[in-house]
Image (cartoon, rainbow, N blue to C red; front, side):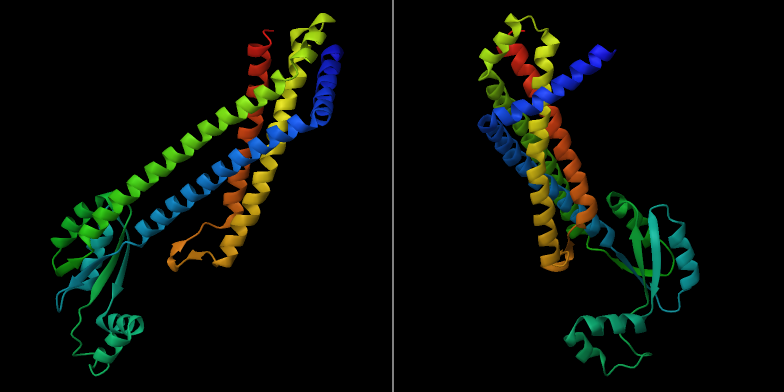
Length: 297
């Protein structure tokens, strides 16, 4: 047991020494890892924000159900809340509607200012949120038959187009991230393989003096993990700094309050963890594969 422990300790020590001793090759590997992982980081952040944006838009979709005059709003509200796909029901009186319209537009404010509350050309209504946007058409059909509902407005065509667009965009972003990760793995593995292959002579000498396959391979595997880890640190720092800067620069919104960015804390930690995992695992696999394939151990 102690012999195995000493072998592991020596292997780790030799790996770090090798990184320093082969400084130029190590730097080349680290730069390759850093560049490719930074691209992956950008793709993941974009995908996460697009997905977050689409989710927020879906949450904001509201069905407006206008009421007939002298309808029983309490009975209608009870029926609406009983629908399975309905998550929230909010009553809006015509007086409240006047206030909202006046605050949203100076033209509406000018038009409505001469109307008293009793004679307002508006209707009481309910604002309705749904749990699953894909079932909104079915939910609207059930709302339409409720007694006391005069009409419904929810932008059917716009919502259908929005759902299909978001679905396509999300799929494209996920595919893009997967492709980038695969390309990154390929580039990192091949870079590390070249680094290991350039030291073929060193490994042949180790074999001549009777070193076991494990004793030869282990330092190189650790070295690959170290290179992958160090290479992931640079894109992690860049990701944290740049994303935090963009978030603070635009105060969490792009162009308007509709397009909200994800808060940096949870997102950058998640991305950082992914980058470290990719860097370390790919570095390990690249080194192991190079020693086994090119040096025929």
